[in-house]
Image (tube, rainbow, N blue to C red):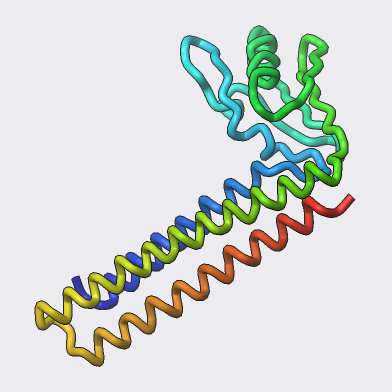
Length: 186
């Protein structure tokens, strides 16, 4: 595998780690209503657990409320049941057409727990990024051993992989800081 392919593979895998982190951070509750809070919810309808986005439109018309409008009003009870049985801690209300979830304000303790969860998710992403760096460095060493790369080329490749690692770790830190600020604001 040529050096540029090793570098490209590392870049793609590191970007995937950042995407996963951002998706996970989106599911962390802030003081505001966010449709992302219920994205991971699966509802048992039509014989299988189905992502809520596939069976309803989800919106946040107010800062303290999420509204779920099912495409088929007949499944409103199943949606309500899924919300109650989830670990989100919400108490949904329905009027026969839509499910409304009022988002209570977060206590300081809950906010601190959310920040700790953000830090854990960020560290997981950084570990994934470092594992990609390790794989890239191993591939570079192997290419040098197989006489495809010279020592200087291998060292340059390792430097480039390290630069990518630093860049993606910084992106992870920035995403975490931004989410922490959102969680801590009233």
